[in-house]
Length: 128
Image (cartoon, rainbow, N blue to C red):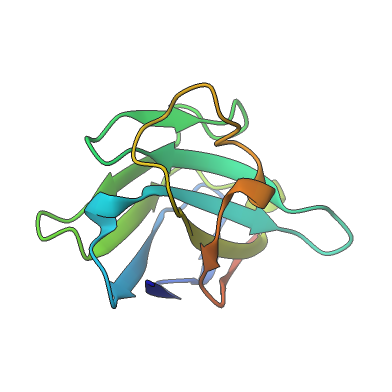
C-alpha cells in the first residue's frame, strides 16, 4: 500500500499562489489514480482534481483554470499548483490514491469514497 504525506500549505494573501506536494512511499503513483480534495470548516470534503496513471487530468469547476495537478517524473510526488487564491480556498487540503484504478473512466473518480489511501492534510489559509 502507499503512504501519502502532504506539504506546502501555509498562509497566503488573496490573489497569491501556493504549490502543494504529496510525497508517496511504499508504492509508485503510476499504479493509481491520484486526487486532491479539500475540506473547509463545517463543509463536506470537496473534490478538486484528479490525474490518471497516464497523465489525464480533470478539475472541479471551482478550480478550473486556477489549479494545476501534476506528478513528478519519478512517480513519487503529486503536486497541486494553486494560483489566484481567494478567501474561499481556505481549507485543509488532502491528496488521495484510488486503489484498483489507473485511468479516469466511468467510475466516480470525483468522489472521496472511491479513494483508498489518504494523507494527513495540509492547511491552506488565504487572507485579505
